[in-house]
Amino acid sequence: MKSIFKPLLFVFVSLFALAGCSEDNSPKEGSEYTIIPTPMSDLPDVVEIFSLACGNCKNMETMIPVMEDMTKIDFAKTHVTFNESAQRSAYVYYAAANQNGGKPSSEMMADLFTYTQTGTGADNHDHGEGQKNEEPAEHMTPAQKKEQMIAIFKKYNMKSPIDLNEAEHEAVYQQMVKAEKVVTNANIASVPVFLVKGKYLVNSGAHKTLKELAATISYLNTLEQ
Image 1 (tube, rainbow, N blue to C red):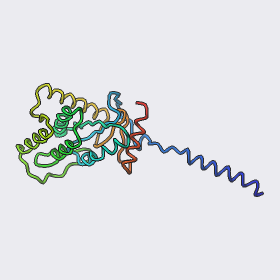
Image 2 (cartoon, rainbow, N blue to C red):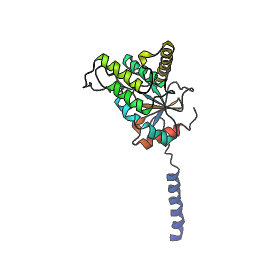
Image 3 (cartoon, helix red, strand yellow):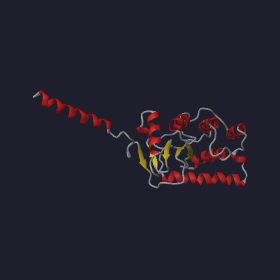
Image 4 (cartoon, rainbow, N blue to C red):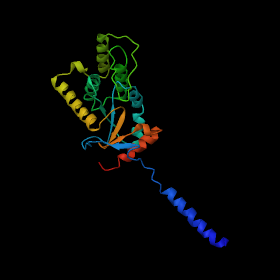
């Protein structure tokens, strides 16, 4: 009797082992990511959609180089244009981006985040899910804020937004038009968020670690657009 059961036991154990090995652990639509309402075929492989006035975006900025190294992908950026306050921040961002090959350096990004989020007159718009910046403690007059902005751009040998000529203003405006299209087509409600292949919107909250987030981005980048 034992000689009969031993082969059967081996078969059952083998079947369970194969089932475990074939389990699909790839990211799932509706959980780790969603497909946006209006996909766009003219975007870079990975786009971080963000706001200079968003505290979580400022924190994420320090992690972007790590994720780029993990995924071997250069992340592009799109600044949200939710409202007038966000549009002011977007204008500052694109004024810098247009003068630095499409994206400011990480050092300048840190300065722009600090500039936007501190002092009287700091942009305090909603970034989705009720998230707003706390009231700034430091008092700065509008004139001081203006000088702070000019100093940042001068530090990186760039024209400040108020010193751009008409053609440069138009170039910034066109970038904001493109940003508005991305935000609208992807139905962005909160930031930061990552858009892959102009089609797949990553659910950052569904990932426990930066490694998991990077793995999902890498996976989506292998899918068809």
